[in-house]
Image (cartoon, helix red, strand yellow):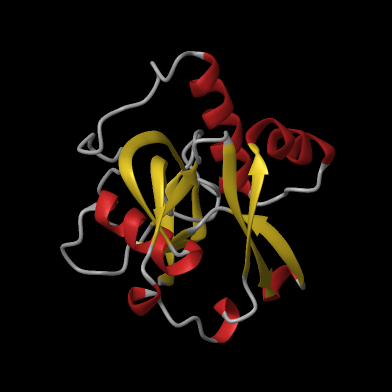
Length: 188
């Protein structure tokens, strides 16, 4: 998923400093919006922060050669037992650029339908206790602004989806839009 590296970085003024950071494979997430204007949220325990968090269906870009839109649909199926007839790029983000190269592409999924029971993913480990909820998009934004939702990608996705809806979806991009990921400079 990631590795920690140390680079020597030229600083303004001529000094050289060591900087540790994670080289991360990246992730995709899905703001799944149903026909009633409800967004699909998952509630999942996250051990580093020792609590369950409200999140979007999401996962790593960990299948070699898999297109990002396919990865997003896979995660939606695995975590929410849903598939989507329409997928658009909503927004891209670097959640922790001070310590990680991770980039997350968030998609907006619409025209939702259930995955047939025989094709559903068996959830294990941290996913076994995951629960799925549908929340009105405006209420989800209110939850975010109250501090009930603190997962960064979820916050960004909900606010971007609400804004995109309010703009008549004109801010959405096609699924083949290139990911804004730069190749890493070689270390010194």
